Length: 182
Image 1: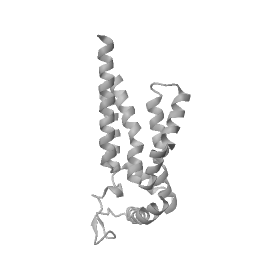
Image 2 (image 1 turned 45 degrees about the horizontal axis):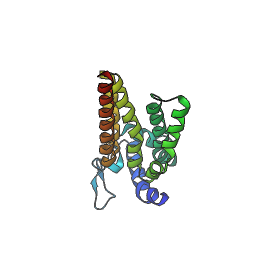
Image 3 (image 1 turned 30 degrees about the vertical axis):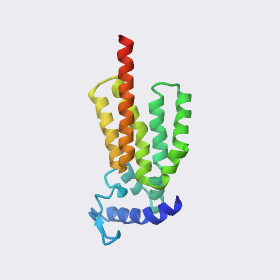
Image 4 (image 1 turned 135 degrees about the vertical axis):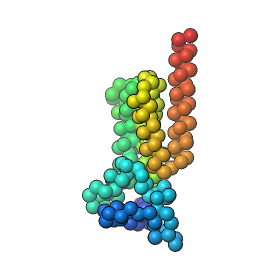
C-alpha cells in the first residue's frame, strides 16, 4: 500500500495542497498525461470538507498522513454511534473497533477516496436509524449530509452499496414496526 500511496497519491496531494495554500483554485491538473480537469477527478477529493481540512493541517507529511489515516477513527466513531443506539457502551466500543480495524476496512487505506467513502458508511447507517426511529426534518438533514459526504468522497460503488444497505435496513425496520403493531 505504501507504493500506491507514494507513487500515485503523493504527487497529487502535493500539487493540490501547494495550489490551495498558494491561493489558487486548481481547475487544471497539468501533471496527469497531457493535463486534465482537476475538479472532475474524484481522486483529488476537492469537495470533501473533512479531507480538505485534513490535507491542509500542518506540513506536507502530516497533512498527507492525516488524509490517509483519519478515515479509520472516523469510521470507528460512526460505527460506535450506530451501535450505541441498540447496544451497551462496551459492546458498541468493541463493535466499532472491530469494524474499523477489520481487514476489508483497513485494506481501503491505499486509496484515500475509497477509505473516506467506507468511513462514511456507518454514519449513513446511523442517520438512517435516527430517521426511522424519529422522522423529523433534522434527522432527514443528517441523512442527507452523511450521504452527501460519502458521495463527495468519490467512490460510487461503495456509495451505491451503502444506499442499498440503508434502504434494506429501513425497509426491514418499517416492516418490523408494521408487524409489531398488527
